[in-house]
Length: 383
Image (cartoon, rainbow, N blue to C red; front, side, top):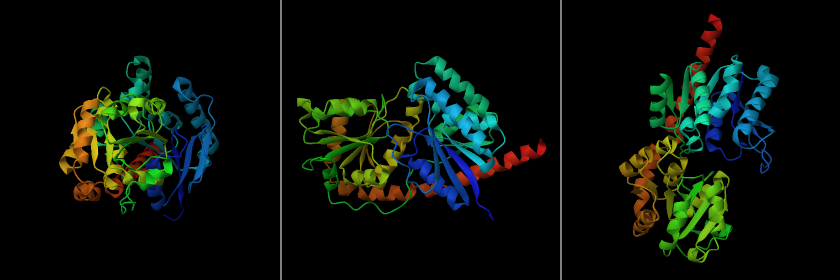
């Protein structure tokens, strides 16, 4: 490529913690593209220090329908002002897609990080879900292909829209595991290291992600500390319970961390928890990045029997699978995990890490981009 082309990469967050977007931008850069990131300004946003040009939109609302409406307006306005400076648009999730498709004069790649219209936030809200479904149906008719995070969600989109759907899982890059000294990394966050540590991480610990159940299990998990790293309503509720007598000072809540810091903590824990509940299509078909983060940190795990997650954990013998995250099931599974030396899990975790890393699915990013570029060029010539 004689001249680097510019691709706008749109997200609805503030650009700080999204590792999937970071890796995607690295892949695009290596292929000769210059990413231009567009996200939103939040009260908690820290100054942008990334390697790419970044724009943060100041929106009139922070949540609910007014937020999504202001996001659409903000992205549309940004595109009017910058469309002459870019050659394509990469839309992350359905809430960024409409302005790019409506513009219609640039190639658009759609990367759906979840089964958006089956998300927990739309359960029991038929009107909101109907709006998003209508937008999705309209947009899908105008796309030549899309990307999503696992085969279950890809199959659902193929069946619904007959679309070419490629899979790029939320896996880290292959690199040597972090070298740590026991649990010492937790000392930086005032977590004592005298007991085994069960770690649960998540940028947003919303309802039904299992954090509340993990906290409820803690009184019965004698001799174990529970550390929650992240944010969200159940993280907030857990923080309020830290001082309760039945927690015995063994519950610890750490705000969400940059990836490198979280990676070090993960490698220092004794068991990882991924406890999504059934009840939402998005959770049932989820394949969260924490599964791969645990794997690459050589951290054995307790997971719930969600389709994609359970299949990997069982096949590769990475930990315990519980049908549902009841406090009793979590307690028993954690104790079963800790009854074995952590070193005994290392071989299977290392082997799985060689099979599940960003480089395995990375070619699909460039294939999808090429498909969208060719389709746009063909449509332009036809018009």
